[in-house]
Image 1 (cartoon, rainbow, N blue to C red):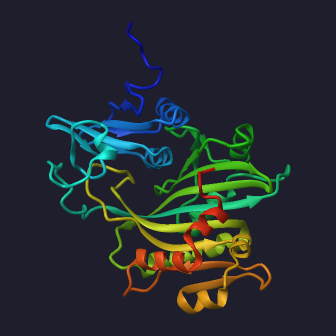
Image 2 (tube, one colour):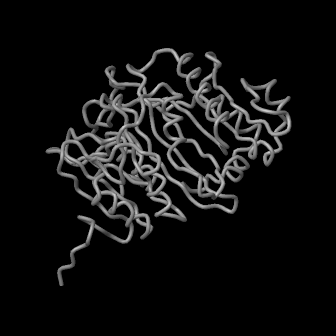
Image 3 (cartoon, rainbow, N blue to C red):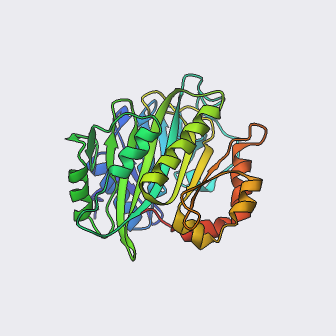
Length: 340
């Protein structure tokens, strides 16, 4: 008997695959449903695109959220969309390593005409009250990083609804106790996913997205300054749990295409007052060892950590800070075992 899967083009007990036929792949309702079904069924989602296709930022974020993989079908075979290496089966995307394979053109070095994007991921708590809104955190983080005002939003792409915090709040409330990501966009290319979930202490809101800097920067002093300034502004206005800002490499658009990218680099971290208390941070010691700013009152401070030493790699600075605090403790206190 011939069986047709309701949302996938290929499926096994380990993965499901979706074949996109457009040159620019958007997070449409069918693609979003495919990813949701994969997560629900605990299967690996594989997005298969045409050679030369690009992914919208919303697709990139959704794939990451779902633990998905990207395969590119060409006249010369199928390749990993992230590494560029040939695969003989979809399982090679997560099982096979090594560089002794054919590789797509454009992966030998990072594209010089790419753009730098300040990626952010911020969590904040609010009371579970009638006056609580969802969406202000996203707009505030985007503009604090130098992005334009959000203008469009929706549950899927293309985004068609004018940006409205009351409308986003109503959609988030309708999806409780855990909302699906709602997507928003600004005319300068800034993008953000908004999610919310009920907790024992109220509502935990997440804003995750990116703000386009322009050409990929050669020096990091300005991005680090923007990142720490934005996280400071968030701490002054909201009740943050934790926040991150990093520098990522995108193609113009912004979008992701089949070209090599510079590795994403951490710029700054925000630890909110509750997390500072739960982690029992020794602020004096941390300030001596790292580039730390203590915000707020002495009884309930927040902390912004900048990875600003030009002589030490950004990841090395992050790892050193995580080691001093305890990476597992940070994840446990922040509730980062899963996305809201």
